[in-house]
Length: 252
Image (cartoon, rainbow, N blue to C red):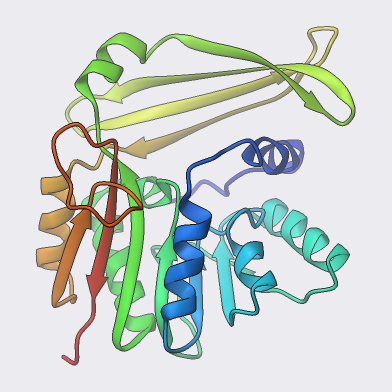
């Protein structure tokens, strides 16, 4: 996983744009963290969309992310809020920690940045090593939809957004880039009111259908797992758009 995450202006824009998301995941992870009997670690914490809610709730939460610029935004926001975050730059497929966590979580499809089976297994191993006995790893990824892939991938989606006090045009495109390896690429572009390019970012991700994740769980150090079809705790079923996985380390 060589990419360094959002950089510069893209990190600041992502922070602003992420506030428009209404996934229900921040409240879900905050509830899981509140129920955890010990400290919590967020993977791919970014600019703090979820992390800062937990910090404000008084939860003992740490975070890591590959993007130094995103973490800088997170620290600025925490400082303005009078809080001191414990976050650091690291790759979620290759990290070590100096304490044990009761819960490790990874929101909003971020696990899909681990492109290869080797990276995915390494991620699961790093998490298991970071967890205390009976600790849990909770994350969400989307359910690959053939309808969306066939009808929507490859086309640009454009919207007018406010950034730095001015109107900008933001457009994004998702397309399959490797059918054999089941990888897709997301490209984001932001242009100012004059049409000048502010930034362009592209990053690959892995499609992770349920059987693939289940096989990873079988090969991982985790002893038990379940998957729900959203943040409401209902078992996954055909037509659900989100997979919410809970892996339990057990006593080993």
